[in-house]
Amino acid sequence: MQKITINRPVVWKSIVTDRLRRELSQELERAINRLDMEIQQLEFQAKRILPELERQNLKRAMEMRQQLEDEKQKRRETRERLGDQMQEVSNLPTGQEIARGTLESWVEVSVGDDISKILYVELVTRDDEVIELREGRPE
Image (cartoon, rainbow, N blue to C red; front, side):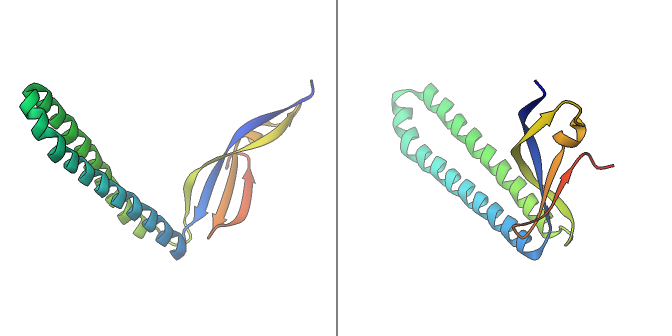
């Protein structure tokens, strides 16, 4: 066998622009709103379920109350982190490259290939347009 096809990670980077800042802020805002709704749902569940459960089994009701509080606290902490990220997004310098995520691609590898060039790939975008593809680790 002289060649095989492998799956490799592709690092997706974006150049910071006003448009990207707006998009990232909107994504974070939607996530914060979703968390707010989940917290409200947990509070609604507590008001609906706990009184009946307290009449039936006080110990189970206390456990359920604690579980609901723990879930609300997790969401509040996540909401706080997202708020911090919103602040970071607004402070990103225009023109800076930021990592957006990891994609995958297939590549054919042959005997004699330099694996370090094949396995490290970056895709760079500016406002949803691919502006550069990079192979190999940066020097």
